[in-house]
Length: 240
Ligand code: C5P
Image (cartoon, rainbow, N blue to C red; front, side, top):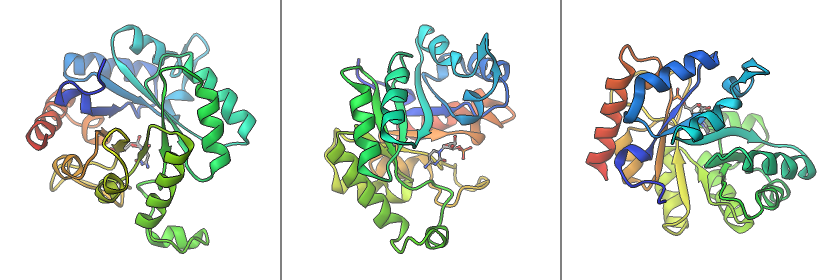
């Protein structure tokens, strides 16, 4: 099945909520408006052994949704490889692995084996600025570092990268059409950025070459999440 048959399939809603019940209730409210969800660290670590955020992955998949497991893995190769193999068994569509080094990336590809799981490398988190990179002793600009890590991810056999809308165009120029660009840090014109620094509107991110956009707070904290989701889908459709 193609990943994005309808503009709706290009929108991934981040279930950044404190409890599994709240995540389930948001999925219920959004109904058919949304086909793709991101489960990140907050939800992975919440719930009870019998009803965990991680358990929601299979539950959503069983209900016909796609799931992006945003686990942002970074560890020694053996651990990354074995962890990716476990995620491949859950039925998730996307998984993130930090794209800092070739050892980690290659371990991800080995762990995925011949499963359908698509691996996305985290290039540079969208809340980081050039100043935050210099603090880590990195002299490259965020854009150069994103491009460098994209090259590593491609060489390792990854399916795509997470990149902010501001770097999406440069990543698209450096990669072929089949290489996925998934873009968080999306805001409608004039809305609050929160802690995000390198933000972009849905139209600009899609026009820059993003295959999917990830939207969290503008939908999950909206007074009417379904209306907010429909607005994002409309903007994607207009830009497609
Ligand atoms: O609420 P907001 O729309 O800012 O949420 C963005 C989501 O995308 C969060 O779940 C965040 O963890 C994720 N993300 C990001 N930057 C990355 C990778 C993932 O903001 N580079």
